[in-house]
Amino acid sequence: MHFLCKLAGSPERCAPSIHIAGSKGKGSITAMITYMLEAAGFRAARYMSPHVSDIRERLCIGNVYFDESIYCAAGDELRDLTEIKLPAMKNSLFDPVCDGGEEPTYFELLTLYFFLCARRAGCNIMVVETGMGGRLDCTNVVDPLVSVISLIELEHTKYLGNTLEEIAGEKAGIIKPGKPLVLARQPGEALEVFRKKAEERQSPLIYFPQTAEIDELCINTEGTKYTLCFMDGAPPLRLFIPIPGVVQAENAALSIITLKTAIPGIKEDVFYRGLANFWLPARFELVLKDPKLVIDGAHTPESIAHCVKTFSFLYGEGNILIFGCAADKNAVAMAQILLPHFSRVIITTPGTFKTSFPDKVFAAFSAPPGQPGRTFLLKETGEALEKALEWGREKGLAILCTGSFYLAAEIRNALKKS
Image 1 (spheres, rainbow, N blue to C red):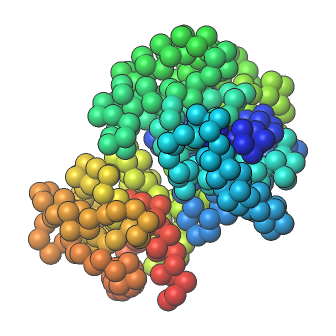
Image 2 (cartoon, helix red, strand yellow; image 1 turned 120 degrees about the vertical axis):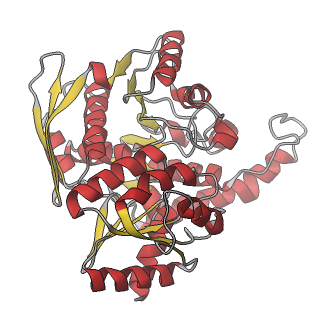
């Protein structure tokens, strides 16, 4: 990735950056930071994944798409680089970097494409979310003003390791020498890894539980209100986010601390204005009102626990669940969390972008405490949605669709078709 960026004229250095990693909430944190930077008058380029409805969701200026001319011109640059410059370098006897090297991956080229778009658009700051891990993630070519790591869990164990310590070690790879690290609350074993890495790299560590706390939390169907209190004596902030859930309050708090660290003296009003406009698809999104249908991209046990807690608080117990997850997710753990809260569960396929095994997921949801006749396997997403809507209207029940951002995308497409 360093080689590709060098070949393209180092577009990853076209503007200062903020770099975000973690297992849970990093997409929301990326977008929240961008919304607040936009409120402060910055021309902020935003890179995140995955997308839900349109690939351009990954590559934005502020929180809207780049102009079409930017995508086209950056695409021309990328094509010339991969079809002309890169083959020429590979044929050179004087470039050991390319000798025997692999072809660039899809995500490497997409990341480079973002940097090219950001440079052409004349952004003055970039907000960049990692794809997976951190140390070897292809976004880790940036030299950020501040690094941010959200709560981590056991995830992508095939690539990142089988323990929280190993996964934390990979995420900690985004910490840069001398640059601050803003860290969400962490399990003890992961926290120790981050502390050691920050100390090694002489990076100031700003740990959320020791910096601020959330008070006066109020959640309803319109969103989340709370007070953010700072432990250094700074005036508290009374905030509103138009998405329900304590997890979004935590994400917003981390985002504010990040901006106060990256841009000392930033005006408080940008926090209010930026967060009041915050929106992302598939973040506890109410997409239908009759019956009520919420889609959420939660795909780890902790994020699922937060999601179902909010859903049950707002819509009650015994509703309908549509669930699907990728093969590398912990379906058994998520089933144990979800099953007690729903009267009917439909297992389906979360799209085709990632490998999934709906039969295995169905088995996980059918095992105790599952009950016969309560869990159904409908692999075609449109059919699963139709059945859930039918039951929802008959029984007056709300529907939660969760387990994967790819499933959220499939549900959106199915709704459009119907």
